[in-house]
Image (cartoon, rainbow, N blue to C red):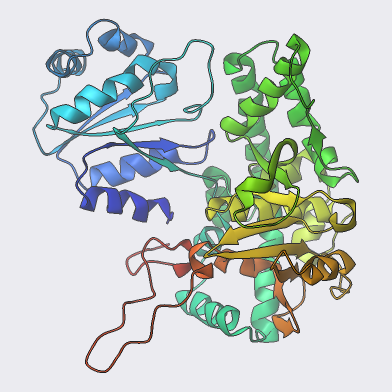
Amino acid sequence: MWRKIDDSLERWYSGPRSKALLLKGAWQVGKTHSIRKFAHSHYDEIIELNFNTTPQAKDIFSTSLEADFLIGSLEDFTGRSCKSGRTLIFLDDIHQCLKALTALKPLVADGRFDYIACGALTGVKYSRRAPYPLGSIDPLTLYPLDFEEFCVALGTEQSTFDYLRGCYERRESVTQSVHQQMLELFWQYLVVGGMPAVVERYADTRDLSEVIALQKDILKLYRKGIRGHADPKPYTRMLDILEHLPAHIQGTTKRYQLPSFGTNYQERALEARFVWLRDSRLALACYSLAAPVKPLINGEETRLFKLYLNDVGLLSTMYLTGKQQALIVKGDFVAEQTGLINNAIACELKAHGFELRYLHQKNFSDIEFVVEGGGRVLALAVRTGRDCRRHRALDHALAEPLWDLEGLVFCPGNCERAEEITYLPWYMVMFLTPQSLEPPPPVSQPGTSAPSSRRVSDPAVGRSPDRGR
C-alpha cells in the first residue's frame, strides 16, 4: 500500500542522517509497517526492539546511557552483531521506555548506526518525564490514509489525478462522469476512512460488514489504550469525551470551552484530559480565532476549541449504525452527513500540514476552517446541500477590509470561480496544501532554466513515479 510517508523516509535516508527519525502517530495508523518496509529495502541489518511486547528490553537503558555500553547491551540482548554504516536500530513503542528516548542523543552522536523510533504516545505529557533529546531527532507524524492515498489503494489511475489536478489549478469544471466517480469514492471514504488495515480489507473484499468489524476492534483498542496509558487518572472522563465526540461534532454548539484560569484541581484535570487526547492524536484540536489576521497563531485562543476524531471511518461506525450501505451505494445522505464531511475535511487539512483553526464570532459561525500558507489566509466553508451559494458569514468575512481573506467553499458541486469565492467539490481538498498556496516560481529569463514547481515533498503532487498499488 502506497503511503506518502514513504517519500519522507526516503528524504531522511538521502540526507546526512545526523539525527534519529522519530515517527509519531495514533495507534493503528501504520507506523511500524511503514518503517519495516523502508528498513528492509535499505539496510543489511535491522535490530528491532519493541518495548511493549518485550518490556525486558527496558533494562538496556536502566543504567548507563554511554553509547559503547548501550550498543554492547543491544548486541548482547538481541544476539546480533551491528555493522557500522549498514545497520538500522528500530525502537518501537518508545513511549514505554522514555530513557531510550533520552539515549538517542548519545547514540546519534556516536554516529555508527542509524536510528528510527516510533510510538503512539510519544509527545504525550507524563508526570514522570525523561529529558527530550532536542537537536538529536527529526520528528515526523503519520496520520491515517488521506483521500488521495485511499483512492490509490482502490485503484484510481494516475491519469485521473493528473486530470483532476489540472482542473483544480485552472478552476475548470470536471467532466460529469469523473465528477460522479470521485463523489462516489468520497462517500466510500466517509464510511471506510483511512486506517490501513480497514482500507486494505475494503479494497480486497468490498465487504462493509468486515470493515465495520475492524473499525470496532480499533475503537476497542483505543478505549483499552486510554485505560492503560492515560495520565492523570481517572480515565473515565477521557472515555466520555471520546464516546460523545460524534454527537458533539454533529451538534449545534460543536465547541469546548475550558475555564480562563485553570487554578483548581478539577479545572487542571479537565484540561489535561483534552491535552492527552490531542497529544495522543486520537483527536484533532481546532482552535478558535479572535480575528483571522496574519499570522494566525497570534489570534489563537487555545481555551476555546473544537475536537474532531482522527479518522472519519471510525467516526462513521460510532454513529452511522445501519446507514453505511445507503451512503456508499446510493450516495444517500443521512442526518449525520455534516459532521462526517467536516471531520473528513479536518483530517485532510491536518494530514497536509495545516493547523486547524476557526472563527468563533457569532456572525461567522458557519465558516468551518481558517487556514494559512504562502502568506495567504483562506476562509473555508463546507456545504452538504445543493444550494452552495448561500454563505452570508463568508461574504461578511470577505468584506472585512483588515482581514485580507480568500473564500473557498467545499461542496457537492463542480469547480467554479464566482467573484471572490472559489467553489470546489469535496474531493478536491486532496490538492489543498500549504505548498499549493505558495506563489509560483519566477519566470525564467532567456538562457536560464526555471526551477521546477513539482516538489517531492509536496503532498499534493500525487503519486511518485515508482508508487504502486
